[in-house]
Length: 111
Image (cartoon, rainbow, N blue to C red; front, side, top):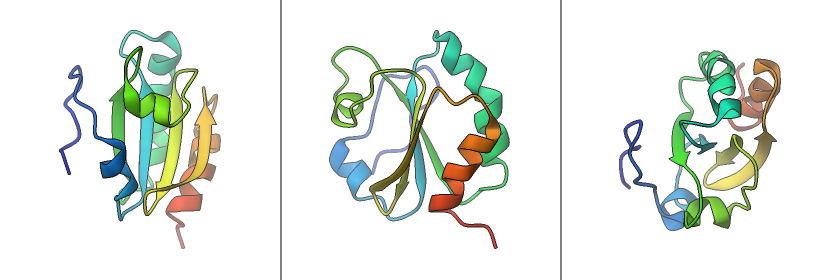
């Protein structure tokens, strides 16, 4: 498995790597220049703050990017929530931390 790319890099994991994840993960598809993506950052950070066990993988998306196409991403940001490599929930352009947190609960229940 490759390490999560550093901000601003263009390396993305392969679909096979994503499908083989064993721990809960949230894929975040978007770009650094997208206004919707930037507006979602504090919401994502807030929701993830209570789910330290969830792996957050940011994927720079755009034309020719296979991973985003394999997930059918059309709008940014698109958040895909995975449990053992399987999609459990998806949020597109989330407007609140609560809607992200609800999806996180599905892959990482807090007792």
